Length: 336
Image 1 (cartoon, rainbow, N blue to C red):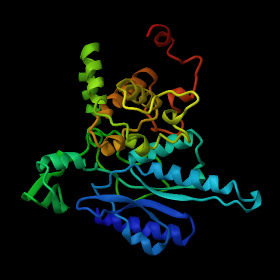
Image 2 (image 1 turned 90 degrees about the horizontal axis):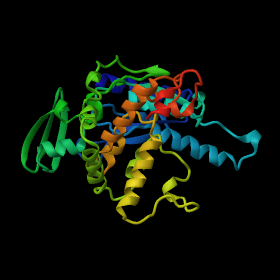
Image 3 (image 1 turned 120 degrees about the vertical axis):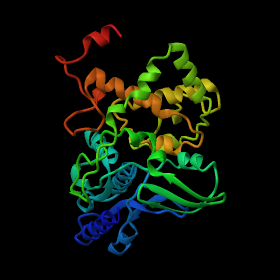
Image 4 (image 1 turned 90 degrees about the vertical axis):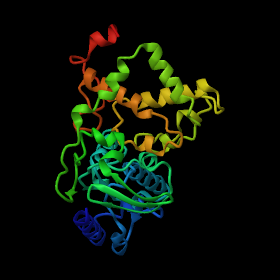
């Protein structure tokens, strides 16, 4: 990864020096052991902070949308002839580029407003899984050495195989390399295990309706409505979320179980053809709600019914964003 980091820093410096980007969104070393955090680089000197490794978790497309939207809103107060375009550079693996494609398809910004620095991805570490692997001990120091994570913890020296603590979304990732990019840093990463992508969903589908509903209600009882999943998701960018609307009020703001279920139901269905399985929502959930199982079920249906995988191509629009009179699945519509 060190060679990729070196090239990444060089590319970021070049973009800023040549004024091809106003800011580079990437990752830097976190303040806690074995963590990386998003960072915003605006000067060539800051580029040396950039890192790329198996600790880089967040889908940075979220920040691309937020920065461009904030800039456009600020430009509304500027005379038309004085308005400036802001170009955002972003370090992007496969799932990040899929989210960028969705933004472009939904006309959130133009292709000329984002500069994509593609990086290969071999998955990221699930922090909750790592904590479980060391029985909840505090990590004092740690490093990734080859295929192992070596740590000094409150319970002594620990070593964990990297493959055993990868996020679930990474283990079966179909698009771990960038789909679109302006420049590619590093060689393409090997395929993960896409043939097993829907194994968990198939097991879930085999259960009875009563069992599936029982599992959904059990998971949603964990939800504390903190909205972390919504805030981390690159496809959640409505200026006013339906949860906060008061005219009409779709969902109550209390802790009623049915309100929580309706919130999650509606959010899940807002993800039809738009979830890229980056795992950001699961990574930030403080209660460990199994959101991914339901999102992958919707993803599987999208593929089987409409032949669409979210963000897999700029030309392949999301199913709910297009209509083809001659190719629609009429049998499905009339005989669900």
